[in-house]
Image (cartoon, rainbow, N blue to C red; front, side):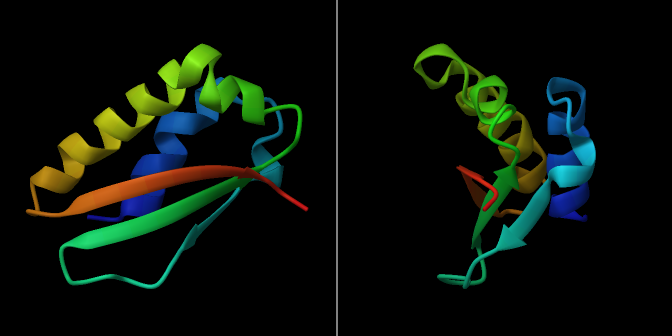
Length: 82
């Protein structure tokens, strides 16, 4: 299962600048845990995080449902693309 594609599919309806999104996987801590950083436009970061982080937490939940099918855990971080 391609985790980056799942992340992109989940966030693409929420953002306006789809061409300015990059998803980077950081060093793996172990075979089960994966950490991804979603870099996006400054105008879109608020849409991805949401008020009090509610949207970000919902995105994390959806992505982790898919990851659990492979007995994996995914951590998502959001940042502004520089």
